Length: 315
Image 1 (tube, rainbow, N blue to C red):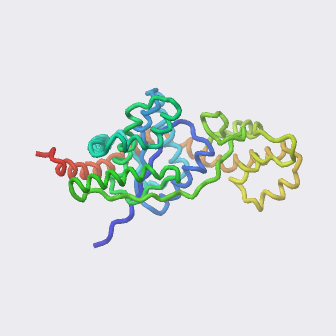
Image 2: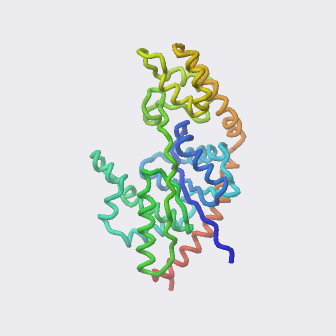
Image 3: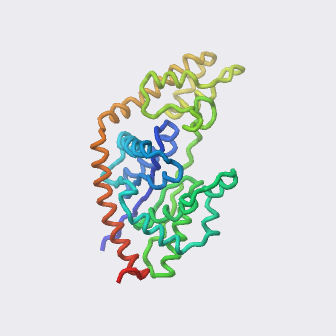
């Protein structure tokens, strides 16, 4: 019997316009994983409800962020791309897991603790978030979950849920392992802080040339020095240090020229992605998500049929 291939699972939360920091930190590593391995990429729309309360914005984000992943070359031969809310078994299995874990256990979740530490009231969805995420992962007999080092806890919670269910009702779920993504240096925004939509300091991933130039020319520089560190840090994403060193020596005191060179290189990288994205319409996106949901539902339904029998609700 041929052994089953190792299966990946990861998710993207539909959060709005993406920027180059998102690309180098999350999108590129995810797309690269699916070049050689099979698995599921889920648009985590139910997770987004913990913070996003604008229906029109959420609908638009689902479409637009799916376009983004298709434009950057997601391999649909290996990646099943689907919308979380189209597979109702996610919410159903999350409830089963919530009945197995304790309140103190969920109180240890980083997202919940961070909210409380900041004096922000956490909604029940955020509190139960780890069990919905565990259901996301475990429904598909996931072997590997790629995460950053700071997200290891998500996979630990999934393993705990699997272990508790297996102990109570018999062997059912694969206990997944995290694959820690190689750390990517923080991409600085145009103000020198970490690039973030919340700071308004981004270079949009699919920006037109004029928008790129405008953003790059506003990158802060240290007028007391002769080396624009923030410009260089972004430039390293697009060219090697061997290529950049002579340029930055030649134009050591000429910030304007260095920024122009950076804008040119950013646009050269973004242009083919931008042009490809323009060819992807909403109908294409919906068809991709529909096909992905059909495949995901087949696997999830089979798993939940087994779960229902084991917990005793199937008569």
